[in-house]
Amino acid sequence: MIKIITTCYNCESYISSCIKSLQMQEEQNWEMYIMDDASTDSSVNVAREFAKKDSRIIITQNKENKGAVFNKTINFVSVAKPDDEDIIVTVDGDDYLKHSKTLSYLKTIYSKGYWLTYGGIDHAQHMKHPKEFYTEVDWSLSLRNQTFCLSHLRSHKFFLLKNIKTVDLKDKQKNFFKYGEDVTLFVPMAEMAGKNRCFHIKDKLYYYRFHKDNVHECSKDKERQKQIQEDLSFRVPYKKMKKKDLINTKYNWL
Image (cartoon, rainbow, N blue to C red; front, side, top):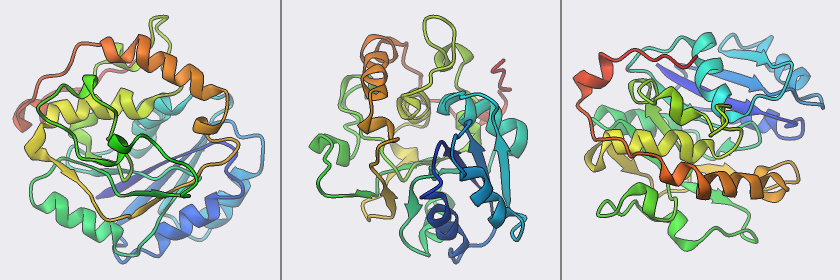
């Protein structure tokens, strides 16, 4: 099954278009897990109106802000209870899927033996990442020694996620990383999967919004970059693994 992780913080103005982009998909066999991270606006109320009419939409609401790493691991797993072969798709609460065939396309990719996808991001043209952000991984280099390019549309098999070690979800003070979850989660998963199991999407299928509460446009971005430069980049890389070894592993993130 396809299970959607949707983290949400003050997405009142955007969550409707996010949910509708899932409901319009030709592929209808999905579940959407909205993790509200202690929003101070009406994000939850808006999402609940959709959930009342669509049982595939499940909402959890944190009493305090936990950050995306916690929400996309412990929080998600405790509610969604994913199976190893489930396809986990990240669609953040302020973003949306651009085309009705996006999930169908992902299913086709995974039917060919891939374990992870990245790429396919679109956004307002006045905002730009480094040009390398939009390219395919240079597999001749360590993922930790090149410009990060594991951009949306991010998805993966659950058996990859469950093999990330607890120590790599936390900072030096042993607290869950609040920012940099793209690096924290997807670099280890791509390392475990390896070149032949990672698919780079070239078509623009995922719309990423820039706005005042977005981590890239607020003071939190400096903290995020500091964590990446001073901590995440120096972690021990994961080795490429065989599927039987990934499946036989049990996660322990407590």
